[in-house]
Structure formats: structure tokens, C-alpha cells
Length: 477
Image 1 (cartoon, one colour):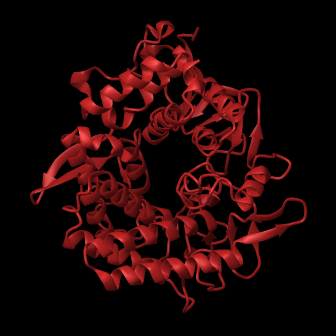
Image 2 (tube, rainbow, N blue to C red):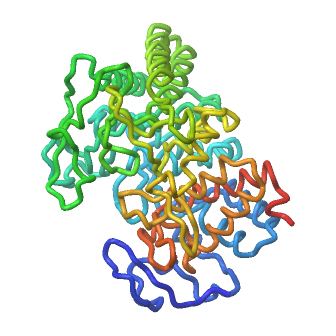
Image 3 (cartoon, rainbow, N blue to C red):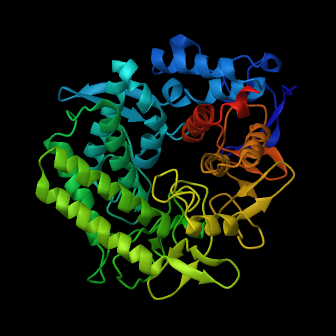
């Protein structure tokens, strides 16, 4: 039985008991008939985008899940991106799609790519869904050409972004340089092609954007010791601005790509962010494959050469010999020998590398790293509380566990007991809302951040489908 009174904690609301009528602009946060697990989705007429294929998938999967609360969470979460964050249109005769994160009206390259990712397998049954995702790919290319260093954009060039000391351009919401942002652009395009065999959106403008991505990656190897990027923000949160006078901490140019910020939008301690460099290797290989199909042989060779260079640098510099854990992956390094041994709940993380097809779950290096990171005696950002245990981070605090980290733990595990434990913790984390959040307090899930975070919701749905496909007995019995 779930209580009808909940606690909400987010950017604008202090943790306090609220009645349903006091929850602003979010009438579907909690349903009055929640005891019966009635859907918390908006009414069909109020949904931003309707896909019959997605709705059919929800009905099929939900009908097989024995646990009513899990089935309810799946029904609420999996379509959340489509229901509430997608805005479709056309531009220059091509599909054009703007995707907000949820409670922030801006389009992150990373989030928007990940938000629509789980719907790719359903495109073959729904042409409208395919056009919507093609529109995201087109919009990504448009944004990359505006500024490859920006991580988030508006749908209006006249809207003003953050008041930061950096080269802010029209359309840009935030200009935090994150390697993974550009990797996600490639990942979505590659996944779209593999699921649809359609290359029509890989036109001259898209190729121009892809070339700019590769150029930017090369520049951010900083082989000449310099970068075109600089970022400063006046803030009381040190992780919200860039170290090293705005360009990130110093590095020894060893072939890796600098990332001044993490996928959590927190500043890096050392700019060689290992998960993002693994992601870059995978993405560059995917881009090389697409380029070959498009008969862009020289560009394909360029992509592959850069991927191999970064991959070799990872083999030489990313692996450290821990005095207790043995050989494991560092989270960040500087190329001089300094290393930071943590992980982050956002993706890419070290734990998420198999999810991104960057390493095998059976690789001994990954296994040792995973064991190290899921131990609070080793990992300062791993919390064990009354509600759950999981990876936290500086973004919202060391006692605030991210559901995304628990979801990815389940998706990269082959252990039935571990997956069941993750499911139980996720059920305990939603605080009666029926949705996932950015983070929740380890001892009381009613203290959470971000009531409307579509990526976490859709990722939860993706996890349920993966379990149903690979280990259905965990959900059906």
C-alpha cells in the first residue's frame, strides 16, 4: 500500500509534507487511486507524442509482470519521454525534434539521445516513431554545428542561457565541454541506422557535423598543450565551474581526449575522463562504419585511426595497480601519474561500460573494477543506507543515491540475486510518485531531487524490457 501524502525535495521545494493539490504543475506526479496502481501517465489527449508500437509494448510487458508495483512503474516510466518531453516538427523538409529533459526546458545532447534510445527497436512497427527519432538526429547535427563544445541547447535562439564566462552563442543553454555529449550524437545515429537501414538523414549537413566532432576530439587531445575551450562560472558549487583557469586541470598529452566536465555536468578533477574515452573509442568506430557505408572512405579511416590511438592510450594509462584490488580502471587521470578512483551514476560511468558495449562484463579488469566500486570502504561516493545502497556523487551530495546507478547495475549484472536486489531498491526509491528521480536520500527516499527526470524514467523501462527478454522468470514468477 502506498501513502497518498508524499515528501518532495527539488530545486524549488523544501522537503516537507505536501498534499496532491500543492504539487505545482505536475498533476500526474501522484494518482489519487494510487493504491490500485492506476496509471500516472497523462491522458492520451495530453500526451506530447503517441506511438501505438510503444503502447502495445507497454501492454505486452506489463501483462507478464507479476509484481503489480513494478508493472505500474514500468507503465509510468517507459513512455515518459514520449508523453511529456518530445516536440516534433519539420525544418527544411526534414523531421525536426526537440526533446527536453523534463523539469528543465532545454535539450541536452546526451539526455535526448538516451531518452529516445529504448524506442529504436519499435521503429519498424511505427513510421511516425522513426521520423521522430530521425528528427532528433537532425536536430543534433544542427546543434553541433552551432557549437561542438556546448552540452545543452534551447529551442529558441533568443532565449538567454547561463551567464557564464565562455563563448556563448545563440541557441546555447549551457556550454560545459563533455566528451560524452558528442559520443551520444554518434551512438543514436548508429543505432537508428542499424534498426532501420535508413541513411536518408545522413546528408551533407550531418556529415559536416560529424567531421566537426572528430576535429573537436582531436583538438581536445591537446597535443600542442592548448585548447580553444574556456569556461568560468560564478557559483558557490566548485564542481559547477572549470578548474585550471577555465580550461581544466593540466594534462600530459598522451593521446586521450580531455573532458572538462563529466556527464553529471560536474567538473572533472583530472580531464582524462576514462569512461568517456572508452565511449569515444566505441563511437568513433561506429562513425567509421557509417562513413564507409556512405562511401566516405578517407573520413572512415580518420575516425578509425583516432579510435585506435585513444584505445591504445587507454591500455597504457587507464589501468592502475591498486594495492588491494589489483589492476582496475581509474575514473580520471592526468597522464602524469595522478589518478582519481571513484565512479559516477550518470552514463558513461565505469560500471556502465558494458551497457555502452565498450567492455565485456566477463573481462577480469571490469570485474575487479566493479567489485572495488561497489564497496563503501573503497569508494567515497558509494552510500549504504536504510532504503538502498548505490553510487552517489558531488552533484547533489555523497548521501544521495542515483536510481540511474542502480538501474545500470542491474543492466550490467548476470546475477539473479543482484538484479532482484536492484529491483527491490528501485521500488523503494520512488516515494509514492510512480517515477524515478535524479537522486534520493539513502535513509529516506521521500527526500529526492528532480520530480520529472525523463531519462531516468525511460532507462528504468529499458531495464525492465531487458530483464523480460533475458531473464523473464525474475519478473513473471
